[in-house]
Image 1 (tube, rainbow, N blue to C red):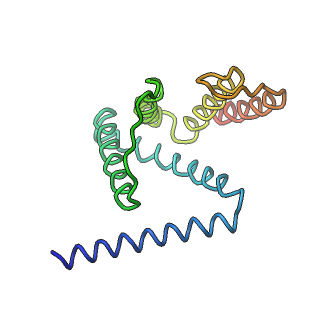
Image 2 (spheres, rainbow, N blue to C red):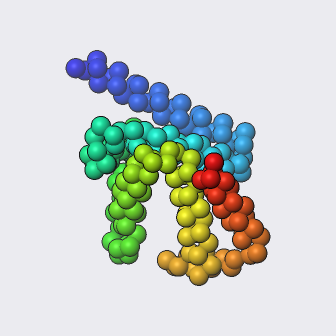
Image 3 (cartoon, one colour):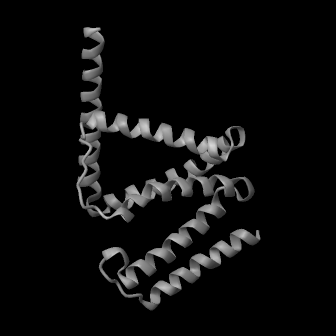
Length: 173
């Protein structure tokens, strides 16, 4: 048992070192663009996630798949937290609406799984991104949820129109 524990600890330290070095390389090579690259990678992961979750919903059902997905996600983040030795922090006085992200995540996965069967991956993703952008613009413009107010510029409407026209073309073809 002692040998296995030493091996596991060595493996964990090795992975920590690799992750640290990768993050350093990304930071120094890409500088300020690192967050853009991570966001681009996140978009690719979401596309794969929608496909995997939607496909899992066929044999497991929408609600069964939802439970499986979130249990695996829970164990996954617990594993990550153990590897990077991140403590679970809790602060009192956090507004209750900030905890709604978990419920919103559940409904996002559920609705993606439901729409995947009829629309595929690209159309639900395009529509959800349009909904995200529209909601983000409203939150920014009015400074909702104690966010800094960022007024709508006319050029943002042009961008929204281009995105919406792309969604219309995707839906029509």
